Image (cartoon, rainbow, N blue to C red; front, top):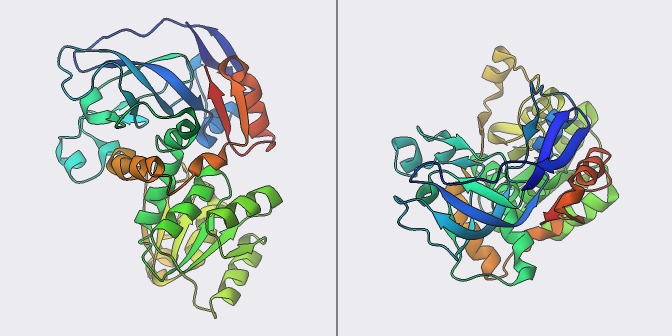
Length: 338
């Protein structure tokens, strides 16, 4: 089997890897129908997150179950399934509390840019669709695996409710699907912070009511101007830098909430400033499994079309070009088909 392997910054290769097999009785083997490159994959690709050895890549996936371990009871061969980037048993106290990405037995699913994938803890991790979907639904179903689930968690963590004003910091795929999520949750006003015309257009299609081009100090002032000096009820932080987190907090009204899902790199917070801001902070690795049934249902009934974030489709063996296109901002998100 051939799959994506990151050797060093900028060096992704599609090469021979061992074909996954059942290791534990709770495993499932799936044949990938579609996978993709995530914005978080660009951190190691750019050298910001170091790697110590050649590393298989990919954590977003959907496909057909080919084999199950002897202890798997709810997933069956032939089913089309979607799973999260963290495998979870879905029974531990953290899972029962809705935080499956902090499962006491969690395992990273991180080798999905390949034709075959082993998924641990299959019963707790995978959710099957009612039947094998039409091909046109697969991109949107794939988004539920991470990017849509993460955008949805950002909105939930930011306490988005009907009638609220929401700001979305970050115009990558997660931020754009944060816009979609806030719209689904009934936000009255959604302000997307973006300086790129193609992303602004998609943000408006997903439900943004306003676009703000400015960043940092000017961006905060623009948000204050748009909210009569008050700030937003909810802010979705979907980048993970010091600048984006500071901007998110400062755009939030006292008593408002920031949902932060951008993987933090070099982010430090001033405790005293945070204390006096009266801003709620909640975030972390999205517990995608909590939301999968809801998101799959919305996609299946064609109430949402999150697959629009894929503006580049390539065969899996061109995965290196997918990384280059996203790194150079020639693509919002690249879909990979085996």
